[in-house]
Length: 108
Image (cartoon, rainbow, N blue to C red; front, side, top):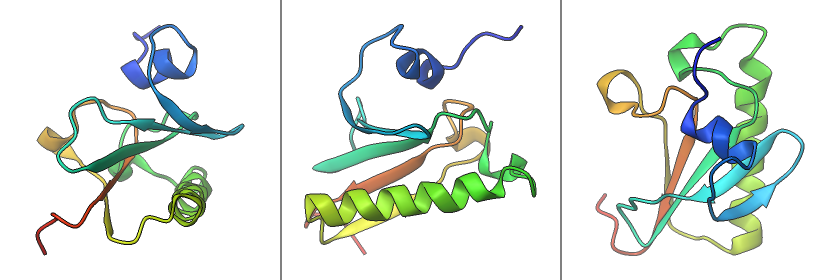
């Protein structure tokens, strides 16, 4: 069996993280290396290695991921934000996750 990703370890409470939201399918945590005043990670509990590995079977998870992010954005009153998936050499953890980055200091 392959080693767990850091996100799987966070989901399983094997390592600590500041969990801001959790339901049966997703967690939202603070990024430990933020690039903006607001930098959260929206992470599915189901392991999908990357956006480019999404299949017809796992595509609904991506839709739910956006719905989860949208609900969180509304609840927190976040007004200015970007949603980003990384891939290839920019993906540092091989577990699909959405960066929710916000703040007035963001460049266009």
